Length: 121
Image (tube, rainbow, N blue to C red; front, side, top):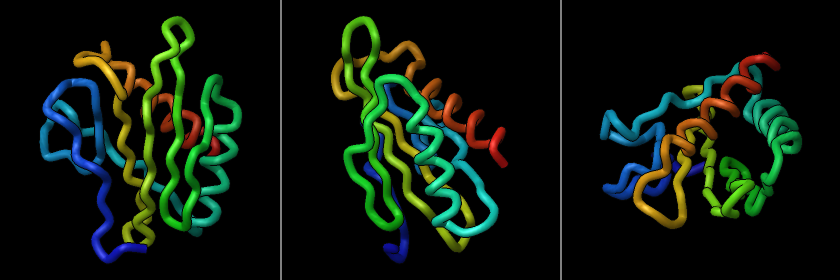
């Protein structure tokens, strides 16, 4: 795992949220976990497998990247997860590929995943 994990910064547009953002309007809490990073990743993968129009595109040791495609217009959002084993946190970034405003969809992606993650704790 990298010494100081980070995700790509959010652009200035309001269509991105990140647990590593310094902008309070784009900030979202990371997911916290107990147990091992491997167990947390398995739990997250199981949750993502139940989510509609969600596809894993990259799965590395401490990193997971998924795509979520909207139902109506088929827009694709990228959601990334980065494990910080020392802090027992999963940093998250969710961003629209196109457009300026997302009507809060990316924040909703993260909070939906968080809700399912907490239910399985």
